[in-house]
Length: 333
Length: 104
Image 1 (tube, rainbow over the protein chains, first blue to last red):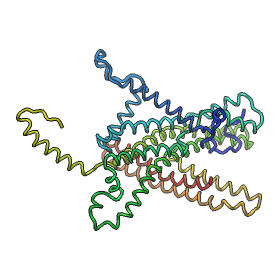
Image 2 (image 1 turned 45 degrees about the horizontal axis):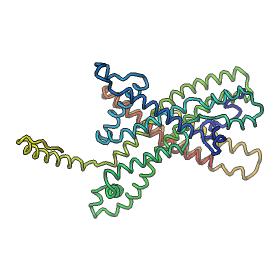
Image 3 (image 1 turned 180 degrees about the horizontal axis):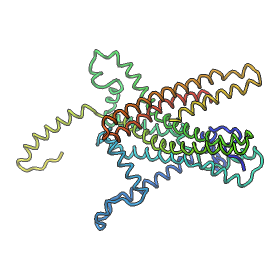
Image 4 (image 1 turned 90 degrees about the vertical axis):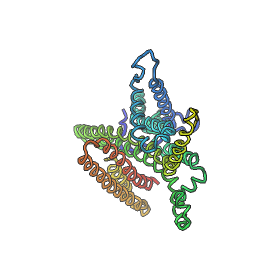
């Protein structure tokens, strides 16, 4: 049976994207990340739709039970969503923006989470083991058969293209929020440093500098989101692959069996601990991606202006309601 | 966290081995990748120093704040984890740069 990561194989070979067995079926180069994206999207969709159907408030006939969420997947989603909304998103974005952007941000979070977690399942190795039971002969045959036998596996978010696509959605969301709330003129003012800076003609010499930096930042911030996720996934998986490679490397270097066994145990034990760390990093990086997108979106909203408008409206309402309440008229907003 | 440390070691080892393996052929062209290899190793090492310093400060201030006000411990811990993830992300940018340099 072929040793899986043995004989000096590059650990990055298990981490970086490669063509799947579907490439021959469809004629075009179908990478493993594409397959993972589709399967991950399906899993996220099924999970979230199931949870939505369970979190729904039941009929009155159940009495107090109608408020209880049943089913573990639904309860996980409920805890995550409630924690994220009330502890993280609402304090940062404010209730109005958080509620408006909640579907997008949560879709981002759960999609990235499912992709990260799929990367922790050793699907590529399972397929290699299943295939090696068929009994292939030489190394060339194995290398050629490897391309045909991997149907799914790897981490989609360990591919820079996938992360850039997710960051593109975040970029579009930020621009849409900016144009929707501030208007095109307001967006340009924001890029020049804000309304107060542009209105003050004495400080206009600093506007070109700020404009360049802000436009660069507009592109670099989502790119940084993508690279952060990419580097965390690639780093973690390369570390795990290297650790699991130590035993096989010792074996192929011709050490005695007890040495190989000891090295395998130590390295494998450490790899188990690193897998727990990677589980935590999967959740954390999905959350950081979503949270930073939320922060960037909230930066593109009205801040101080809203206070003045609200005070104005409240005074207006105060005087208006005093006049309108007397005859008992109902006035809508 | 151990990610950046070991990734920097791997980057440096890959660069070093790619140089040392070629000295048997004894051709001048084999030293072509040496600058990139040394640069990648230095970049990885500096990234680890930066990450270590940054996250150490975050942990220190989080512990001190929790000691001052233990009832805020949960909130402070959450903020510490979030900030540590951001600082580690910045350090991993440098590791990505060094990996790109090696693989070019």
